[in-house]
Amino acid sequence: MIISKRSAAAVCGLVATLAVGLFPPAAAADEPSGKPAPKVDLVLDVSGSMRTRDIDGQSRMSAAKQAFNEVLDAVPQEVELGIRTLGANYPGKDTKVGCKDTRQLYPVGPLDRTEAKTAVATLAPTGWTPIGPALLGAAEDLEGGDATRRIVLITDGEDTCAPLDPCEVAREIAAKGIHLVIDTLGLVPDAKTQRQLMCIAEATGGTYTSVRHTDELSGRVSQLVDRAADPVAVPVATEGAARCADAPRLKPGLYSDREKFSEHRWYRVDVLPGQELRASVSIASDRAVDNDYGVLLRAVTVHGREIVRGSEAGDGRTDVISTGLRYPKPPVDDVDEVGPAPETVCLQVSNAFSAPDSVKTTPGMPVELTVGLVDSPDEPSDAAAFGLGRGWWLLGLLALAGLIAGLLWGWVSRWRVAVWRTN
Image (cartoon, rainbow, N blue to C red; front, top):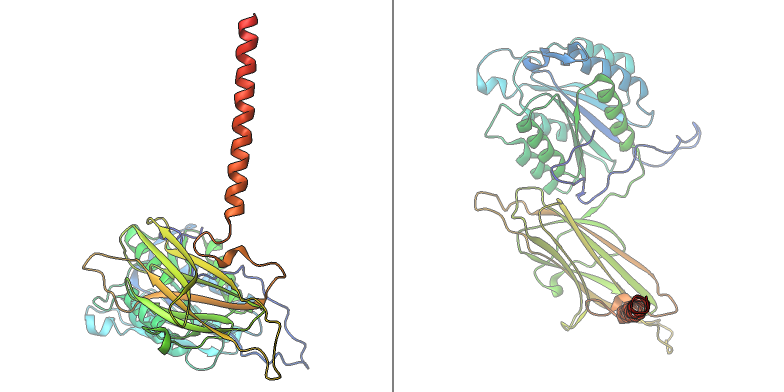
């Protein structure tokens, strides 16, 4: 069962972005795919609490080993996989030593299934739970290249190495714009562990799963490994400006950014006559925020005239809030040899988030912006007017339907009264 703090996944994920784990068939041996191999780092908790026997009559460690063997047998050929441990080596009480106890058990790369299984078989529950340092180490394991990258954290408890808060570590990783997703799995977790693992996952657009049976663990890890091989769109990191004149010029695509509470950020898009701009934005509340919030997306001319806007409000029931807009630019009849000149449209992304004073404002909340340019339809779009747009015809239709319904109801009521009087 997948659990989210209130709703979430990436999305951020962000915005968004949790596809089902089915991936395309591998290319033929003599036909290179040309795509970089996706990378996955499995991070396994080997702390002392993994001795607890509460998963299908066996210890959590035994359940994890069984699941790993099944997962390693099913790893797709094109996935480069590594294994990192935390709490596997130091059994003592020295905090400084225990909180550094994370190491790469099997390097990220082409998988030798026998070698990886042998490495996992040697593990025994031992020490501390340094989740924050392990995530930093896993991020380093996956450095380099443009491939899809995913960390899958499997643990049975919360981090024991504060003040290095693993949730803050995940936010720092996300703020780097390296498009690394962290999925978390809690083995028979308590409420406090759940909250921490949810926060870690949501900070990078990942998922959180509560696990109480061995088959759930192996099935979910296999699904996440498969998902790394999915041909999903990877957002391009960008940074909006405080005003349109300094804003980055965006082409059609998917972009990620960060925005502080109540901040406004600007971006620019060139729209040719005969094209329709379609834009949407999602902001993820990856930390505790006040219940009432909102997001606004505006399209404005370079002279400051508003063209169209989209807005959405929330009341604490979801961790991701989204809105969008459409702006069709009419075609022109007279075009010189150079071609039609594009119009620069300024996109403003604003949020109305607030939070208690104890909540950190940095890094900003994850923003995912989608920009699309398509050929305009022959008929003008109702989406290009202010607010409700040219959708007055819909309001008129509803009003007409209400009028007709009222007249019919009045006629039926008078008929029933007349019948009652005659009787």
